[in-house]
Image (cartoon, rainbow, N blue to C red):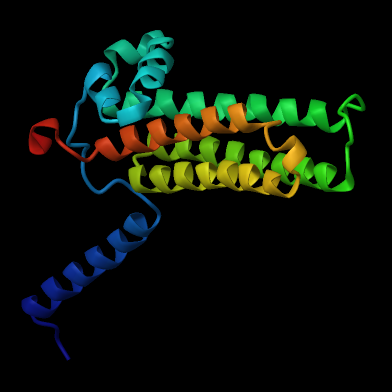
Length: 196
């Protein structure tokens, strides 16, 4: 049976669709970013975190001339660095014998937080890779997952009320940096003129 030109064209079209599907599923970028926010305009979108956003992003010289993807990358790296420093701090206080009334519950809470921060650092590191490869939705999901780990760490301290503030300031800062990173990453696909 001979194939007609119609069947050959349909076969080529189906093959093209099948070959394109795995690339789309793998998080390959489907379109170029639409937005190009300045550092100031991007930070304005972070609402109550504006001051921290400006201070954090301005500390990186590359942010001043970055596009929205570059700003998101700087924000994610800042959150990742802060989370990594908190993980190191957790290790030091876990081993610190000077903490008064170090109960089994407190030790368990510190251990849980340490594991959560390790996961957060990994997720934020993966978010940077996702940004670099055009996986903006994936980057947002990874930042949100990292932020959730930090929130769970803070919630865990409810079990040890006498020590509940041991990480509050550090958790709050990492949480805020994750909010900034998430908001700016979300802006990648939103044109500044579309929001006005």
